[in-house]
Image 1: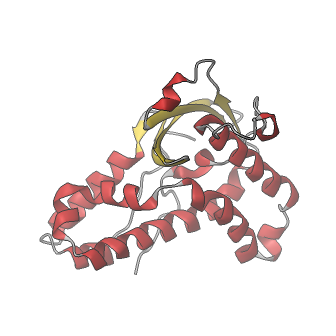
Image 2: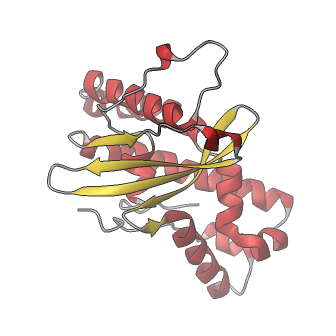
Length: 219
């Protein structure tokens, strides 16, 4: 069983789809035959999240599971959980794990992330995130793209960097760097340390997995 930490990854929290009122490109301005680019992908999902925060604020107290599900419905499709989980395990432990254990960790990682995200997000409803759009979209021909945002908590501003990978016509988040803290690397180091403490027993490592990236220096 996995137990999550309330500070867990400060989460892909206010970050990945969270709270922005600063969209400069609207989905309805895209041509029908134009591929949806990663900048619009990040920003448009943030707009959807804003609607939940504005219109469903009372739901957090009256029907929390329903509120959390609304958050999850937006956030889950944004992340390539299979790729992220494999990266967190690292090559050595990924190869040591059975197929079933790899699949188990994907579910563990996804559930912990989504549950903590939904719980934490409600506490940051006054924050905003501004997406940094670019003028030159030639980089969209590449498989990997970086999208930057700035988190404004009201007291301070922090840089956020999304690493996205293209799969067909879809873009998925594979890592996030918040205020200089590489979350993917942080989790990988935690997994490695735990595996060593469990004598590299993968099943024991999965059973004792607790992920925690602290607050990424954001307060």
